[in-house]
Image (tube, rainbow, N blue to C red):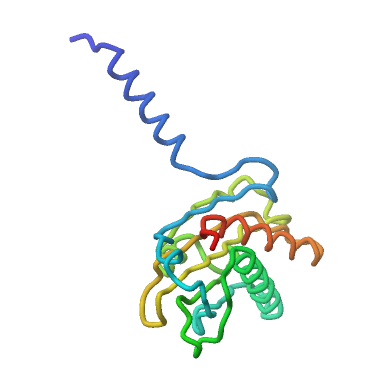
Length: 191
């Protein structure tokens, strides 16, 4: 029996198209590559008063050094607050009845794998780091999640991954975090 090549060609093109569209990874120099995954619905924010507070138990970092964790969390908090303010949201204390809570975290690949992030956050960006010199770069992940209350799971979350340069000056690190947070929160509606 002779097989007709046309159906097999169609299947091959279909699979190539499907696999080519799945990834949102941006190619280029390691420090320019990024992947972002978003889950949830932000329509609640448009009907709220736009008042948010920091989630008291979901602000975490997983890095090798504690002082780097404190710096990263501080910069992430500043960057998130800046974007939210620019979009018209108001930060309040948790006891002032906010409309929603913001939690966030970050990790380096050496401290938390993609599988561990999936298990904890329910998202997987899956950016490859196999072609990057590990002496110069390491994959970093940042998560931002919005919660109706402290007792509920997130109604919206975003996970961003990129390559973190190991020997980057502090000012450049801060700018990288700010750009990453801004990119991650671009889907938050303007008030």
